[in-house]
Image 1 (cartoon, rainbow, N blue to C red):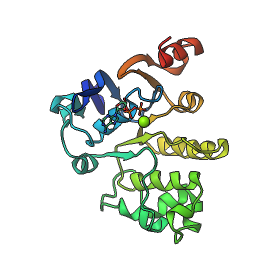
Image 2 (image 1 turned 180 degrees about the vertical axis):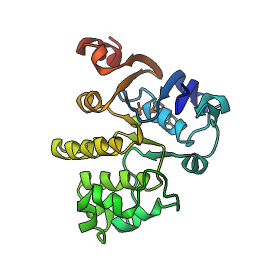
Image 3 (image 1 turned 90 degrees about the horizontal axis):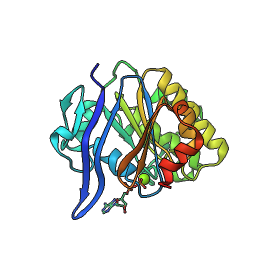
Length: 234
Ligand SMILES: Nc1ncnc2c1ncn2[C@@H]1O[C@H](COP(=O)(O)OP(=O)(O)O)[C@@H](O)[C@H]1O
Ligand SMILES: [Mg+2]
């Protein structure tokens, strides 16, 4: 079976500095995969490479088995790869509704994500539609960031640290939505430092350590100490 999205021996370089070393990775259609790892492990660099935001070799990334590495971000979005960036990156001078609609690209797609269905998923956003994005709580802003990516009707939703800085209650809400997005058939890759959130949401996990994969498998394949060793490298 061909993976929906795959990385082969993927490397990310920033000038002379190498952040990601020969990572092999795949996510199958309908799967939710979590990438865990400490600060600086290369998780965001890897996700940015998948989204076309940092350059890679053409054959380093395959979509439906076809090389797509090195394509610019807007082409990756057209091909069905959408990123929820670390830190949300909302447009601060725009309303919630306008932030969401920024992502609209006229693709309705089989998942049928639209402004209305995203507001059904996050009803609070409909209530706050005309407010400026920075007036929302952290959790609500994260919902906008997820909605803005979903509205492109992606085949793969890439989420970078969606629980960062949120209260436990907000993390619960955001992950409930991730569960619903998965149930509707979207393939999901989440980068997550919160181990519990990652292990409960994911079908499979990859742990990154210093730019390399230090562990891969199903959450149940490992006990806590193995995961912590792969996470901290001890
Ligand atoms: N734009 C950049 N230029 C140079 N180095 C970078 C850049 N972005 C990240 N790095 C470096 O790459 C390494 C991995 O960072 P990152 O991918 O952000 O890790 P993580 O998301 O796991 O915290 C870190 O050492 C970081 O300082
Ligand atoms: Mg990061």
